Image (cartoon, rainbow, N blue to C red; front, side, top):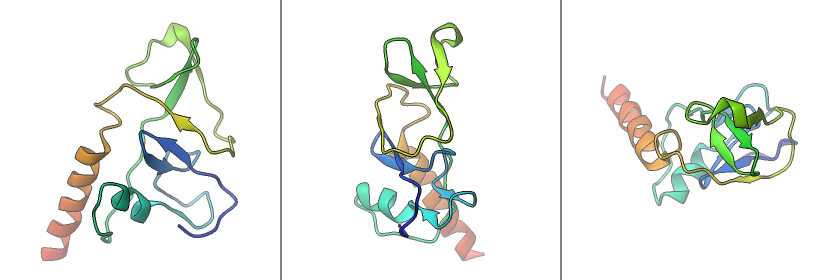
Length: 114
């Protein structure tokens, strides 16, 4: 990852910008595809960056994806957050990076064959 002013958010061991993107045009030089592939033990490839489902903070201080959280107990985390946070989530549908990155890598390889 290039040296940037933006600190990544760590969500289930994958890194994203405060805009919930692996590659962000709003955050200068922000690209964590290589780090996220390496975490899973894979060599980096040229693939599309993934986007993370935005997380929300519950009343008990834990984070959950907005898609599967209960709206009455949630409030949004500010996009301007510039600190490194480890977000603990239980949503394996939204934050199953091995499955999501496997699909992204397969799509990149398929696109390269055409």
